[in-house]
Amino acid sequence: MLGVDIGGTKLAVGSVDASGRILATARASTPVREGPQRVLSLLIDLCKDVLAATLRQAGNYRVVAVGVGCGGPLDPERGIIYAPPNLPGWEEVHLAEDLTDRLGYPVYVENDANAAALGELRFGGGRGIKNFVYLTISTGIGSGIVIGGKLYRGENGNAGEIGHMCVAYDGRPCHCGSRGCLEAYASGPSVAMRAREAAAKDGNTLLLKLAGSVEAIRPETVVAAVKQGDPLATRVWEETTFVLGVGIANVINIFNPRLVLLGGGLTQAGDLLFAPVRRVALSRAFARLTRVVDIVPASLGEMVGVLGAAAVAFDRLEQRVMNVGNVI
Image (cartoon, rainbow, N blue to C red; front, top):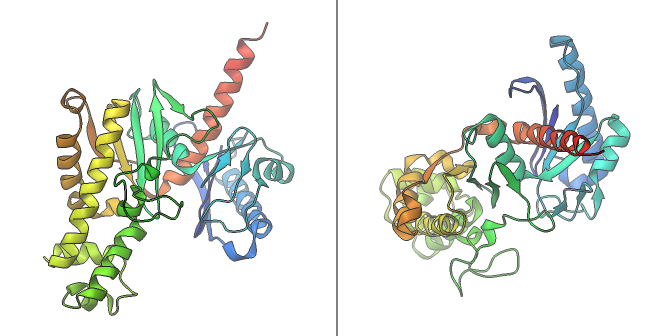
């Protein structure tokens, strides 16, 4: 399969076999300001490069389908993208149809967090686990929910907007238009924004020394300052991990999962993130549910986008085979 990962800053394509081995890859920066047709043209070039490299390296492999992971909102059944925040100008882009016409393979599109969950289910930390929730904590907070060994998509394919779970009834405004969303407190940009706000009010902080200016403060600046004991950065980080822990406690109470897998850029903070999040989540969730759940790092790392997209293609093809088998 070809796995295609479409992000607001980068594009990645890889050929993946049934065991999860990546045979060839290609990457490029997303020309997001040039519109969807330019991005699609670049994607086609990357796909062709990967197909050629796969044939050179493993001539006995035959690509049969393409899976795509992309930020939502989208229609996974028809492969249509509806104005994702990280891809301005993508208004009702018929992605599956366009790529199929130009590549000649069936194309299956899925929300990127759902794709990552399928990747973990097939190739990563979710193998053999029937019930788990994957959370990505990065530019935003997305999730994929696996129930009974199957991805749960909801009524119209958009289940799992855990980043927009309300954790503060009259809290910070969120870019979605609501207030108090988990994403408004625990995503990478929200960490940086709250640190900038605090540093602008109180200039006596290591954050300014590390970043050089208020505007240059990033999530990694906050993590570095916390490690060096900066009180202001520590207050921001403690709020972040507390709210994220409360959000995960809600997830545990609702879904009773065996695992909560955490991925995304903010998890690079390691135990600085995981230890307080586990403590809060396990103390706030219903006790009987906490006895069976582990909160652990996702296992696929930076290749989760490509592997997840490939898993989408494997999953959809398997569903088609099962459906054909039920026809008489």
